[in-house]
Image (cartoon, rainbow, N blue to C red; front, side, top):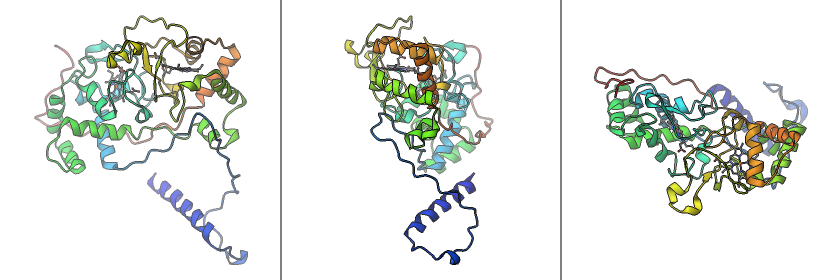
Length: 355
Ligand code: HEC
Ligand code: HEC
């Protein structure tokens, strides 16, 4: 993998520097070691679009990311020793659990649909109601939530502190002898920042590759724009950057008691406003809406048209928008499954059953 990147980087560097060089007489040019690809047509990136392509993540501290990855997958951060972040944000399934509401400690039913962790670093705040300001603040929540991982921060830290390989790794990453919850959430957030999904076919189109999406997908995008979906779903993530009323034109009917943004602001004007979800990888993150009221993408588009815009789409229009939304699936995170260090004789035992 690394070697591959290196070769690409070297080739890219070679191309750049050769631009600056004076043209060489043909005969003097030695045969290139790798056959040069046919000159690619110069792509004209689209301008003035309400959506921008996802950039590949920049990793500042690889050791921190590796530690955060282990913690994201480590079920020993839960009371049962069974539930990890990945249980509800399964990175093999678009960073979600594809359930109506998550299953937490002792099989408790969660109150709300789990959003994807993919591209969550782009959100203006975390959770449907935005009650955590960033990923680091968010990451402390589920560990101590009785309905999720059912643990306490102190116990989670005690468990990690009892595992010598973790102590060494935290020392290496943070230059500190002790582990605390702040370091745990810092590392998890650093890992989550790498969970972005570049290279969706739609992004290739934005970058000027007209053949990257089909006629139907393009028609779907045009309709998505002209209908007004982009008033709320815009920017790199097509969402994540504002709180908006669910039911802007017509009320949304649900039995779910979540009140949305007003739970945080205590302002009645914010009742039933939710963070606009990203539409990146939305093909993978069914079911939809905070209450999972829409099982399929087609249903979600139908409901959005009606209650946010007062529009009823024809079957063909709906299918085109759905096709467009499916072109937003990007490269999923690729990495080796982390190997977690074994517990020691002093590690507190997991408590999957009982009180
Ligand atoms: C039992 C299932 C469960 C577990 C375990 C869990 N989460 Fe979540 N996660 C959820 C649910 C449900 C929400 C939405 C809650 C809400 O908005 O009120 C959520 C929200 C989030 C969000 C916010 C995303 C957004 O768009 O707002 C992030 C980030 C996140 N979780 C990361 C984590 C991390 C990191 C861990 C491990 C420390 C974790 N989760 C463990 C179910 C879970
Ligand atoms: C007024 C703002 C607004 C407009 C306009 C809007 N949306 Fe949404 N959209 C939202 C909000 C807010 C949610 C989350 C609501 C909830 O779960 O309660 C959402 C959710 C969605 C979801 C589900 C995503 C998920 O992960 O659960 C899809 C799909 C979607 N919108 C597509 C569209 C389409 C297509 C249009 C245009 C026909 C559109 N939206 C117009 C605000 C808007």
